[in-house]
Amino acid sequence: MSQIGLFFGTTTGKTESVAEIIQKEFGGENVVTLHNIIDVDDSDFEDYQYLIIGCPTWNIGELQSDWEGYFPELDNIDFNGKKVAYFGTGDQVGYADNFQDAMGILEEKITELGGTTVGYWSKDGYDFNESKALKNGKFVGLALDEDNQSDLTDERIKAWVAQLKKEFGL
Image (tube, rainbow, N blue to C red; front, side, top):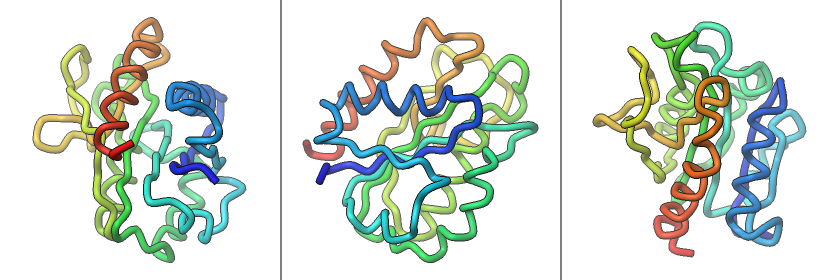
């Protein structure tokens, strides 16, 4: 079994594609196992000390529908002792007032349930007004904008994964 469980929700396929790139950057399926949140049981989280949570922001600052449906189930999971990294996809131009809100919503909930957040990411290079994903002046995870900055995605993922390898102690 891999060391890291990556749990994602996707509607258009962008977040799933990012999850696959992250998995590859870590070294493949022997290191990172992908879990589409639509197919997850609560017990799937138990297998990992290191988690990556991926969610796009939908509509006006909402969770993607599969995550929205699973959100109440998070209360059944013990995140104590787990290091949790987050990534989100969003549109900083069209939704500047709630860019990456879904990532912030999930991070807040999982932190309340005992998870330890790693993988904070600089807000430099982004142009938005507000975000629930900001904490102490940084994003709580990797913020990606496939609509307006897709040319920066690969570079950002490489840097973030290198950072996570250190923070996970891998």
